[in-house]
Image 1 (cartoon, rainbow over the protein chains, first blue to last red):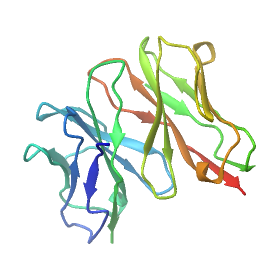
Image 2: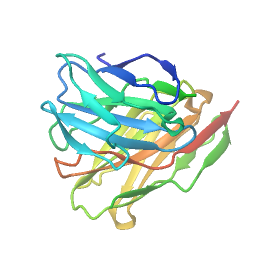
Image 3: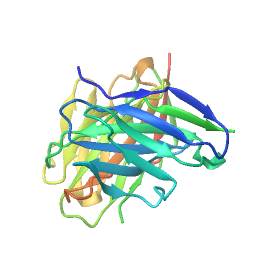
Length: 115
Length: 116
């Protein structure tokens, strides 16, 4: 069964460094998403991406974040200058699109630790 | 604004007991979608079910059943004859029916512990 994959599973970085989190969505899906989950808290939406552009973003997704689909398979989240509060689990998701049948399937997550 | 409330922070049951996880939502949309996801200790988010606002038919899938009631804005999830493998955090989520707004709004989750 197709699934969303994410790399790395765990990333440790120093405050102020740039990190890139990578995702391979399900191959025929058209919509891509990033969410984050601070330890022990709820899952929060960051951004959605469709047709090579951002279709929706939350207040969390400020100028230090960016997303890109550099080729036909990968979808990346870049954090330019990491802060301690960026430490969280970052989930990538993808969905086929459509209306009533649209379901987001999540990857296993990347745990980001900022020191 | 959309909101999902899962008032039960943690539930502990003994194996084979039935357990119901509550979810109450708020939205101004006339069309919307509701979801349940499971997060086992390994951390991934596993899709369990989707319900459309225009379909109030309740559903049973094996040991799982869902009760959607628009009148009370609730979408509760019941596990019958719980098993240790059901131990996880369960999240209820809401999505607008507007095709331009696909963000999922999650509740804070209910941690279910099933004791052997």
